[in-house]
Length: 273
Image 1 (cartoon, rainbow, N blue to C red):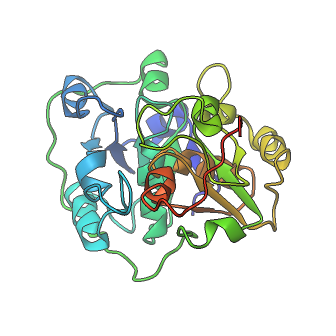
Image 2 (tube, one colour):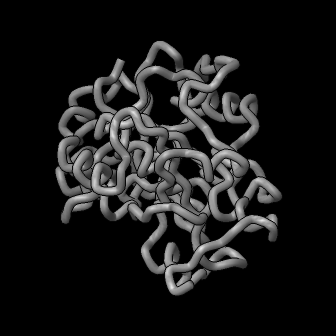
Image 3 (cartoon, helix red, strand yellow):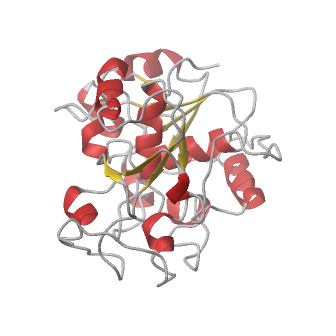
């Protein structure tokens, strides 16, 4: 079992051929990452589309509801994921999209999943080999286990946790701007730890002890009941991964802000209020 949720470029290079690699390049409102994947990717990687493989269609559950478990499992098998083979995920967004794949695989029972620290940019900077064109992975055997291996909270539970964290940018958390969802602000009582706080100047995750200090400053310490949300449940997984690296177990609120604001009776807080 992996001892860290992260893997370095050098470690991945030494293990190519021994792991399943998933390319999860994606951007909010941007084109799918399939074209970027075809132009160049880690050798042997399979492309995984976040909108179709890692999410269900938008609705009352938010903009990116969790995918149907069986549909997710089928997508992972198509990508070559096996239970007896470690998985490495990466993107070109400092892990914010790939963390969704990491979390879903862990949620559904894969015991050895790691995120490439620094992602595609770090791979290229280090001179990692590049493959282009499409791929047809050998079908995997991944199945969902039938119970959840990562903690999850829903809208009716988030106000009761010890520490609720909002992973969005500070201006969205405060309610100063809201470019995506119909209501600005944050869930009452939430503390803001934007995903940028997880990263050093080169776009790689801080060391575990440094992450522990970041989260301890807002009360997210081992033993506390911690939950994380973001806009639609994608980048919150980045904070969950950082918390795991810091030694803190944290739940994810999958629907996040986009689901919270579908009910006008739910309270909203703004920093200027």
